[in-house]
Image 1 (spheres, rainbow, N blue to C red):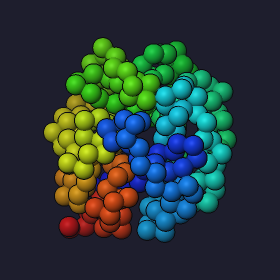
Image 2 (tube, rainbow, N blue to C red):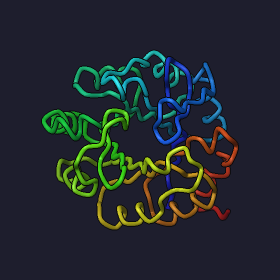
Image 3 (cartoon, rainbow, N blue to C red):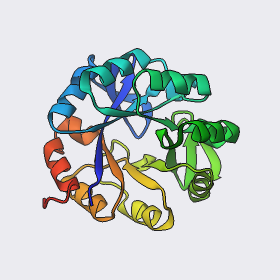
Image 4 (tube, rainbow, N blue to C red):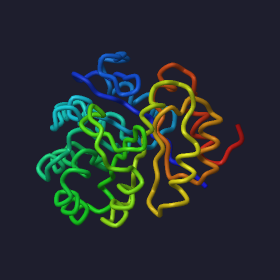
Length: 243
């Protein structure tokens, strides 16, 4: 089993940043040139990249597409992008910026007609972000908690023909305390979609455990920036190597 590793770049004002547990007041800036960060990931052997437009997630329309276009052209990585994609026009502009897969979050929950149109038009190029806090789906850049149960939501997505979901346990995100392995084990058993784990993956043993679950992918964020995880090693383990 090979699990895909997605290094993460969160964009804010064109810079690469990280948040702690989704809190915009707890932001660390890592680089004013996100395309250089992406190029380093590519040089380490990555094939994929997870990008979030943080302002887009909050305001409802992406504002960092220029940075995204630079990242895709400079790095050559297959980029999946989330944050504020809530109309077909915006979705198309993301694909025109070189993005391989768009991630719908708030819109997938609030606008089923758009979700259906997007999946019908673009198929596997459309993924859905399922951001979980206290068992419910969070929306609008995690600033708001819906009353939708995340498992019920996943079933709705599977029925709608969504092939890939990115599931984030917000309580774990950026906290460097390990990922929610139990959650991903359950999701992997319960659904036939590609499951991408996100949030709190902070050691090579996390990477090993998720690989052994047979997950489609895992997103590495803060652990790469702090040096807690070496990307080359993570890629090796995700391809079935021993830690």
